[in-house]
Length: 76
Image (cartoon, rainbow, N blue to C red; front, side):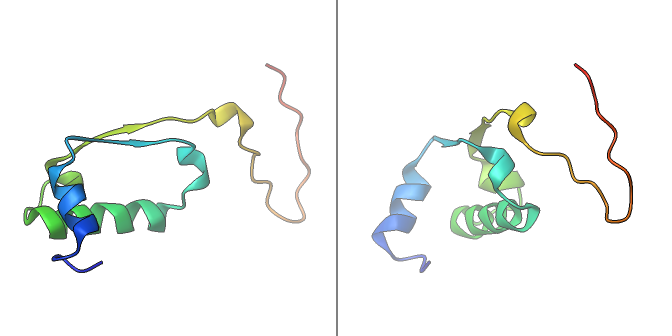
């Protein structure tokens, strides 16, 4: 995104950003958002100093079971 684009202006003016289904974003995706906001806001604060609200249901995320290991049932 170019810093002179209309989208960049909207991000600069935004006070709050809401990210739903955070469990679907990879760590690299979240780092990309952080880097973009730091560049646009021209400071080194996390997410460019913007307020970020994240949401999602971590109970819906499937566990990662390494190959050649036995899955253990977890009762809640």
